Structures are given as C-alpha cells and as structure tokens.
Length: 169
Image (tube, rainbow, N blue to C red; front, top):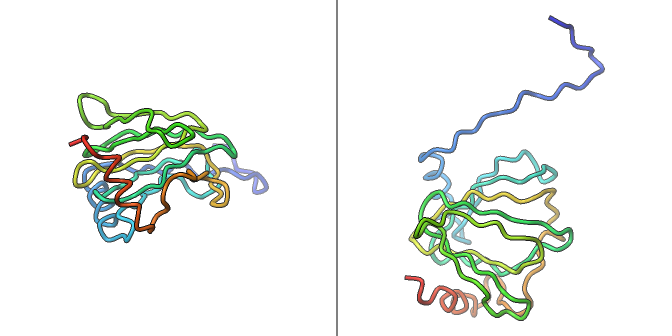
C-alpha cells in the first residue's frame, strides 16, 4: 500500500445517494409545505458544481415563470419519475410552440437546448422529475425571464398557468 503525500489533495470517495420511493415522498412532503408548491433535492454538492443534478418535486398549481438560459447558454434535461409534468416551449414572442406531457403515452423525458424559453407544470396532483443542467449556479444570471409572462406572485400568474394547461386533462 502506498503512503499518501500529505501535501497532495486526494478527493473523498464519491458518495452514493439512492433514489427510491421514500426519497421521492420526502421531497414531495417538502414541496407540499412550500409556499411555491415545489422544491428541489440536490445531488450536487454546491452552486459551483458541474453538472447540477436534482429532483424537482412539484404540486399541481405551482408556477414556474417561462425562462431561458442564455448567459451562459445552458441545456436542461427533465426525466419524469412520478406523475405527469407538462413542458411548455415558447417562441421569443410568447407563442406556445410545443406542449409535451412527460409521464404519458410513453414519453418520459425531454432535453431542451440553450436559449429556448420553457416552463414546466404538474399535470397530476404531484410529480417528481430528475433534472440536469450545467453549473455553476449564479442566481443573478441563471435565468432570463420571459418579458411577456407574469412573475411568481403576480395575480395574473394563475390564469396564465390555467391557459397553458387547458386541454391537457
């Protein structure tokens, strides 16, 4: 066995986090208790980590402002683990260009390229996605919010969300 040089930094062995029904349920409990009706369970260690990997737990009625990732450009992937999640993709003027329901008809995930306005919403009472996007996370530049969409807490947000979900059943 080789002795370690005390001046050499040796990374800790990778940790293991199991993704099971209990973890999904604990994360959903936190989402139900959140004023925003959603929460994350992060697998990455810090805001500086790359990539960011996390569970995104949603309760029906949560509103995610349509946004895009342009500075720096970042892709974002969603894989549904429980329930049904609507993913909305928008043109730059706010026109809905595509609507997809993850967890329905064999569709389980989507990968969204950088610079495309998008939003997600729970179609079922609750839903959990595994989400991956590049780090690091800088709250000042992470999201470019759509100028044509209401912000969280805006009285018009629930009507905007209802119109997006209309017809998805």
